[in-house]
Image (cartoon, rainbow, N blue to C red; front, top):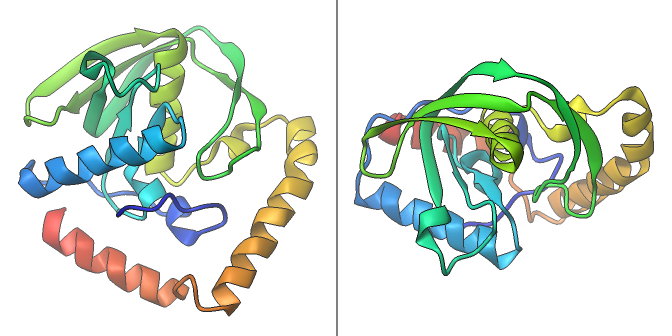
Length: 194
């Protein structure tokens, strides 16, 4: 079962690699990502958030598992044509309970592959544009806290310190592998699929 990792896990800062193919194993991973996302009422989840090195994320703007038409899978996404600017509150499943205002383009175009391996191009606005940008940032090792205003960063400092203390405690107890072990696992996964 995939587990959503939390800040400051090193995988959250690693740049994901493009996938070479869509197969039954990838489809299983995607289904598990949706299930994990729904279990915590999320609307988007990147592969890096479940400790996988793949350029892939899933989204459902209503977090509604009963409506498969709202389930989006983006493999090897590329964003372009940003238009406008809008500020809105964001949170992150890897930083539960922490929220802050982030300024992002209001509209965006995404080109990617879907779960059948077909290319898709979508022009998005509103919440879906924000989800896509937030999740795509994850694939580049960028977190929403990196995009907070200086005031927002000061406000988040205490919560981030708490996350760091929890992580260090888990690592001391052997619940989280060393950075070297994490990197070796990523290298092996990349050799298999990227």
